[in-house]
Length: 45
Image (tube, rainbow, N blue to C red; front, side, top):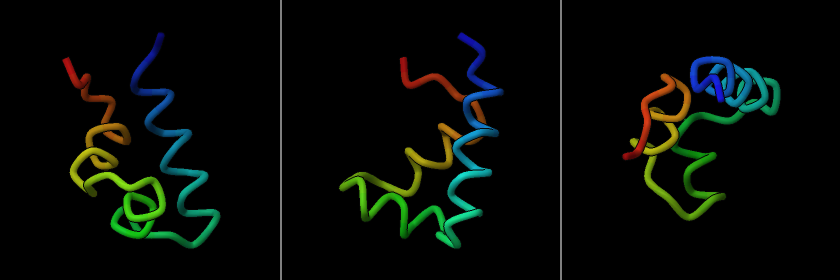
């Protein structure tokens, strides 16, 4: 699994919806730091 590609995809879709990382995080009931890590391809492990 290519975390960088997945992160770029998440960022593109979020921006296309006009959402900030914080807004997306609130919709998903998580922290904006988690969204940031996803978009940067940083593993949670």
